Length: 581
Image (cartoon, rainbow, N blue to C red):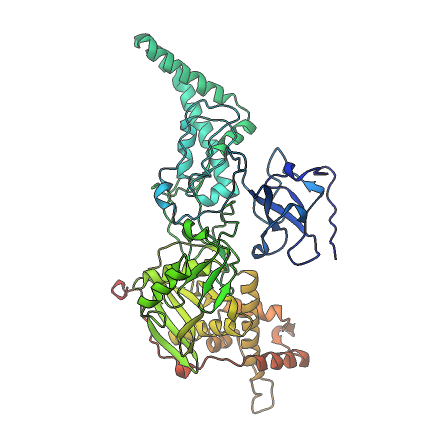
């Protein structure tokens, strides 16, 4: 059924041709293999065999549904064009499509890989000469991924561009860094203006050629002071380098990756108030940086063992691999190859038939392997690249030393095949027992997600403390964890027996935490979501109706795979002692 959308007449207009469409426009688009026409935002445009193709993001839908569409799939009767005074996109999606201007006609805005461009990153930092033209600007988006500059705002001076390198990436994206940079620039100009009178006194002793150069520089600074705030903002946007990182995936329940970005141009990260940014306090803190590159899927297909999987999100694989129709990955060491022939040559030399590390759990065909991110760095990095294809909420980085990875595998005659994994910090300041967790798409909706969650809490029981997944959780992650918390807590409550004198059983929140290793905040939020807590005669009581009990029994019958603590052979380590690393 075709979905209709009503647009505001002030911002919606009829588009006669798709040639007038630009990045940031919103219109109705026919979704792949459906008859629905939801509202979508154009993220990127390219030309293929003389026809324009559009990469669209469906508003209020998950990013994994983003896709390339043809001109026939666009409804141009009502189009929302980006406002000239500022980007209109991002009002409901939470992200904003940056401006991009191509210097050549028919340029393809193809997503590229920060990993393959790391060497050219330092060379591609924009250097703007003073007094550039009004319409050209500098556009380095096609030359490197490490720094993408928006073109078309005027040349500007090199003094303005040099101050942009010391701002944090998150501030560049959400606009906070732009306001701080404008304020710093105004303060700097005040100092320059105060010093012009003293500089004029020294003009008498300079040579005529030097006098002309200094006078031209002073006139340029004075002309910049007379610019309107809107002109200053446009010029600042044209000179703002965007450091590209692999942004993605599921926090806590649905998967995720370690965060912080690889070093960009060799400068220290400086916060908005001018202080050096403090080190991260958790394993995969979210730093949402949605730009044109990381918002687009750059891998068409991967082949992992017997499965061919279509990725959901961006992952910074090398650019030469992203141009291939399929990336071939060894399912045991996770090495990536560009062709099946390369994979066959690798398999003839690869001796692994299971993940490197210690097997700490085995029951029937399910096994868990513990991987140290410092001892098995290459495997951990390859795992992060693979998982980033299906994760959207975390930022990828390559320092895997502070993390442990727990790989769940399924055994058959050919070896141990990866089913899913979760990672956790060796030392967590906030008692996180999961940094990132992912079930591979071929094994989803089979109970393996809850098995991963149950295993993470089983490790917390062995450690003798409560734990919680790293926040924020993705939509799928929140559903998975809420379902696990609800089933685990209800199982504890229903199993309570009345006391000998016939009174109703009593249990505290702390008792539930000790039995399940679930953190107190998660227990309380779960009881509230289930509407089990009631206030009666000055105390809180838990009331469970029969419908809830029957629903719980039906759900537990579907969980045929459970963790057996007797099959876990593992001793927790005290990672506070650096010798353990």
